[in-house]
Amino acid sequence: MRREVSIAVMARAPEPGRAKTRLMPALGATGAARLHAAMTRRALSTIARTGLRATLWCDPGTSHPFFAECARDFGVTLRGQAQGDLGARMLGVFSDAEGPVLLMGSDCPSIDAALLCSCADSLARAEAVFLPTEDGGYGLIGLNRPIPELFSDMPWGTDAVMTTTRKLISQLRVDWLEPAKVWDVDTPADLARLAETGFPIPACED
Image 1 (tube, rainbow, N blue to C red):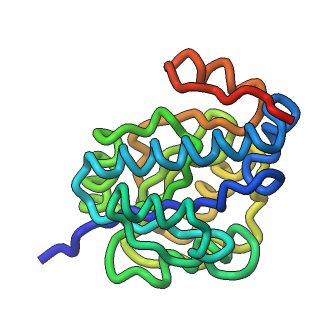
Image 2 (image 1 turned 45 degrees about the horizontal axis):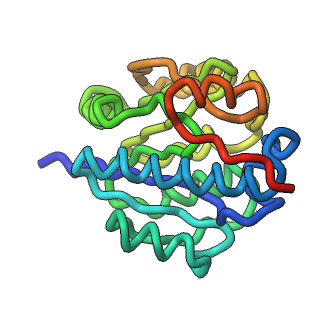
């Protein structure tokens, strides 16, 4: 019997100056943190509509009241992220898993419940699934098993992440699928596009 796919979301505590710092020039530290909290809640609400089991991987640890609210409101399990760089923290999620996992953040508003279900189905046909982003990264990675090579020596935060990943996963002879391309909210220029979706943008309060 095939093991059930679960979904993992990585999120920082919405503390001013620590969350969505690249948006601070437009929103201020407080506004950027508020947007991060709202987008995290939106992602968890989307996941809840899939019916799949979900875990919220929290940084730094699970003690922030925001994470307790998320557990209460969306029924997610809370776990603390591993130490290290982004790759080490992502690998920690897959290494902890007992079955196939879809790992995502909260900054891709175009990922809806139907697309998540499609990604989950993809893991029945391939070892890996990705949702590449328009800026050269990816907004979701799904794996049937941990593949440590995908998380070391990766140019995180650059437009070369997905290209490098494709090259590496081909060398590893791992089959993968890319059901769709998505966009994410990383910079002030992305805020207008987010506003067009009807998502409320916090005012700059700083």
